[in-house]
Amino acid sequence: MPTKQRQTPQEQTISGTPTGFNNNFIAEEFSKPRLTNSQTLLQGKNNSYIRFQRDQDASRASGAGGRGFTQAGAVDIVAGLNSANDSVNDERDPNFFNDASRIYLTQKGKINQYFGVAKGSSIGRERWSAGIAIKSDNVNIIGRNHIKLVTSRARINTKERNAQGGLLDGSGKIDLIAGNFSGNETVKSLEIFGFKLPIKKKKTLQPIPKGDNLKDLLDEILNKLSDIQGFTLDNRRAILEVATNYATHLHPGFAGPIPVITTPTPMALAILPTITGQFAKIPEMIIGSVNIANLRENYLNPNFPEFINSKNVSTT
Image (cartoon, rainbow, N blue to C red; front, side):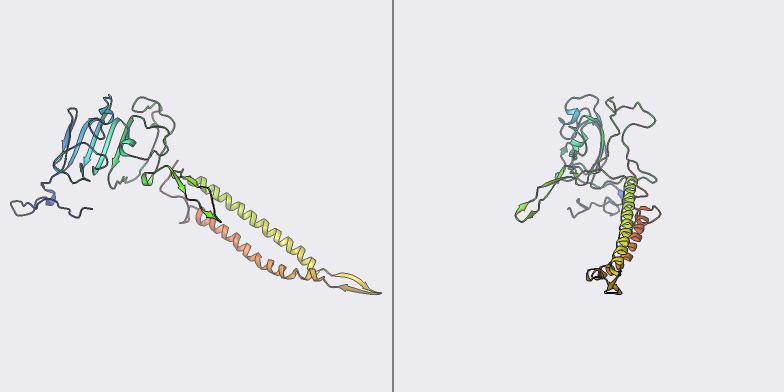
């Protein structure tokens, strides 16, 4: 990383103040854009420009303009031509990787290819099409009220076509790709007792769950868990009742001519510790039912702070 913010001699104004302060002019060396006879340039004094051109992403032979295509107008807005390199005072073609900040608009181009963007959910090879790209070290899109990422045709024009006059197919897709990689990710296999488990491949680009649908699913799962817990508690109570009756059952009989009451058998008496333990677990099950109810309120109730859905971000 460069450590010097001021890389030119500190020339002074008539008053003795170094040039460049208070946003006044400062002399500095930088690369100049190389032009063709079809291009018009609006250039600033400190390595910024707007170029009106035909589609070109690198040398003059690149892009739709380099291939001689028609209907390939483009506008290239740049601050910091060749910023990542040290060479200065030379002419440079656009470089979508070394230039500092860029907004590029093209009537006909291959935006993903030009900027080296991961394929994402696109199917097949990229086609020539209209596109806009924004690139810098940091990009912020700020809406004072609202930001929408929208695909497909306008709602007020159902006959809208793409920039080449073709039909718009479907609703389109939105890919959010961190790390600029959307291929399959290999999960390393484990070795157990000398045997290696199969290597798995997992998609890095996956669909985003819809919050309301996810909430309904989790609500249904909690309902089923609550039902199962209730059935288990009822079964435990029934089994305890049968076991208690068995362990405490007395048999009337006779010892010769004398009527007697026989005590429970040793096997029946052996059940008593189990009965005691099962009775002790009943409060735990009741508490478990309360916990399920708390989970539902904490995470599935929109009035609680831990509600799983965002109040500000929505998706289709």
